[in-house]
Length: 224
Image 1: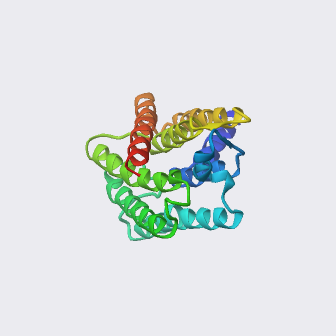
Image 2: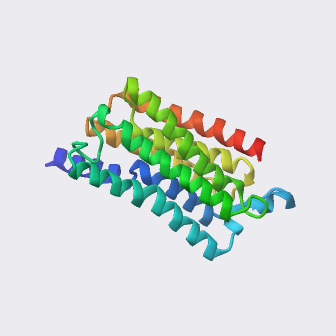
């Protein structure tokens, strides 16, 4: 019974922190975690200070394009027997879904740059969308040869983004950042407990996510 309960908990954690939801969670933390800009120049780059209505609209757009759209695509592919499961346990079935996610991330990027001018809105919002495109491309290339944990990759991307973001602000409560990092460990423990991945697949996925976030966000900020 104890083992069955643990398996149930692991499955709950896996679905709660499904890769498609991680960008939405990350953005929500930025929107609703009080942060104080170090200088007046940084005020524009602080998502916490955005208009509440714009925060909700932005989250809805992220949710539709990064969760609903690719999620429905997976369901359709499963019904058409193009994939065995929406969990994408089979490495050979991952390529097209990953490309679909990358496509929607690209659409999101275009919408953000057109509707939220970087002159008035935090660049980190746009950067997260760009990171979605980059990470999808990298995940696609890796998947052609080997298998990594997409849950761990997404957790690494989220943790890396938050570490990068919080570096530029004074944080009243460091517990928020620690919670984000520990969440990655929780997710990887769940995936390992469900025997979905090996330790190497989990660690490599997480580290790739961290590295991609640091590199991508730095480049985007430099160019913009």
